[in-house]
Length: 261
Ligand SMILES: NC(=O)c1ccc[n+]([C@@H]2O[C@H](COP(=O)([O-])OP(=O)(O)OC[C@H]3O[C@@H](n4cnc5c(N)ncnc54)[C@H](OP(=O)(O)O)[C@@H]3O)[C@@H](O)[C@H]2O)c1
Image (cartoon, rainbow, N blue to C red):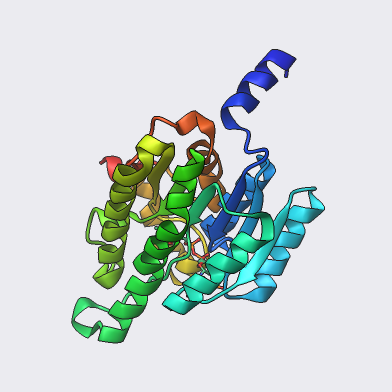
């Protein structure tokens, strides 16, 4: 690449000097996003529960020369979220980029959904992103730069495979992005949502084990295949970078056209 092209692209997309916090950064979509942000230059803190997966991800990034660290925390409780936020901010300083990818999909049929299923789903998928936004959004606004990226689901837009509490939580998450965008965009803090279709990650382990279902779902996309975690890398870098400063409050589908027909 010639120098002019290189300088132009890094001016748009480089995350050098930025810090990022990625929940769910140890697996699937969150891991791919954390990897992309770190490769683009951000000092990146991964937050999830499983220490082994966190350490493996951070070690893989460090082996590439990226700056990455991890914090083990349970985002299903408010004290857990608060502790995670403080621990993460202590590593590289207050984050400029917050990605909420941690999520659970419990899938009992609506009639069998317990209050505990509902509460746990809302706690991880909606309360944690809200609390992390409250903790970091105002500081981003004071500093004049911030990027909040949520990961929702096509189930925010349609009932699908026992959407139950999950679809409700993801619908709320997209509304949260709009509320955050309303609050802080004028101060340089954008808030957007990436909307996956079907992605072959551990979250979908049961589904991926059935080749007929995998093929049927792939046929419902326009691209002709199901999503891979890495499909989210470039969209996440865009939404985390200076290049997306005029994009806010949006739900951006990265789903191979699943939602387009
Ligand atoms: N895969 C898909 O087809 C698909 C489709 C639509 C939307 N999504 C959304 O995409 C996001 C990422 O999903 P994925 O497919 O990448 O799933 P995944 O591979 O299962 O990753 C989920 C991540 O969230 C973390 N996590 C779960 N519960 C947590 C808790 N209580 N506290 C802290 N961390 C927790 C997990 O780590 P620990 O378990 O170690 O805590 C893991 O890092 C989710 O929000 C999901 O709803 C996925």
